[in-house]
Image 1 (cartoon, rainbow, N blue to C red):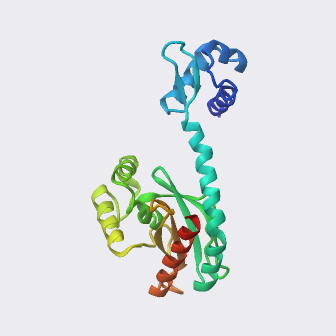
Image 2 (image 1 turned 180 degrees about the horizontal axis):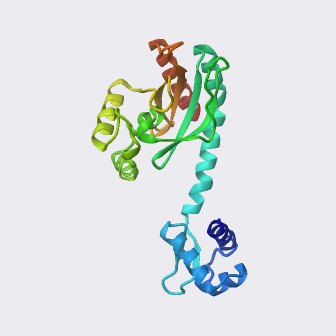
Length: 242
């Protein structure tokens, strides 16, 4: 926890010095030995949040920091466009609706409309592995090749199940998703629960998220008309983003 506090403090201080700051100056402001400050900076540098000028040796924030707020703004805009449409869909097909965005090899629930009669509850902010979730498979299937390869390289398939547990089985599933246009999981994340997901592209055709419904299959297994309504809702959200 101490290391996290020091790292966050270093980011705050660096944000005040856009032209850069030396290790000694930063250590003086933070009240830490120069050696400790240097370790913090090295960690930030290795993760591309800080860059060091080769000549002056000064440290400053990299543009990667800006992507954090950019992603937050983008996701907030996406939720604003999707929320009411998700509520309408939930009432129409009587199922829980999930909007998930990809962060590396995880899918994060950006918005959730829990249907009142379901026996399970999903929460905003929850994350699931791309390769094990219907939202992840729906999003990954339509990624540019280089992005998909990055996801696969970052994936720990040892946490898989009998359906998908290695790169080969994951690629087979993605081929199936591309063929039918949606992804399905059957009790892979939660006992008794099925999920169906479709990719959610922006106005330029880039897949930026996935839209899904989840249901307790013993009571109401997914029907084709539900999947059609899910696709229609995703198309409406995409149209509103154009």
